[in-house]
Length: 100
Image 1: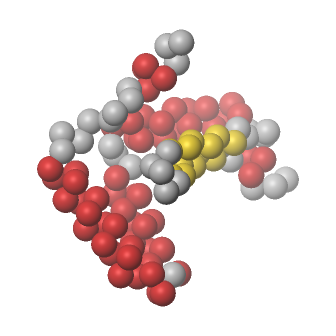
Image 2: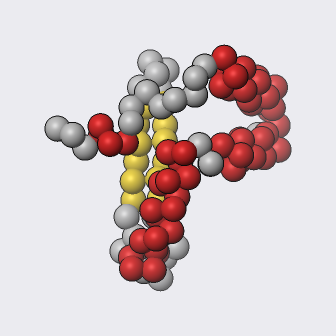
């Protein structure tokens, strides 16, 4: 059994034009067992509870990429400043994403 076959994967990417893409890989196995954990994760993302985990992952990536450590630090500082300066509300609400 491959790890990917039993995991829900949600990833975000942004390009130089600022276009954000969201990729989803659904598990092929353990769907019933993962359902509540997927829901909990999505709630944590939409409520902002994933901020600390995300910040830790970005910070830890500096040790894996020492050549861009200063760049990573500048991203974290800019993120923190923007978060303080903004209302920190999502631009697109999840409830609006499916209203087509």
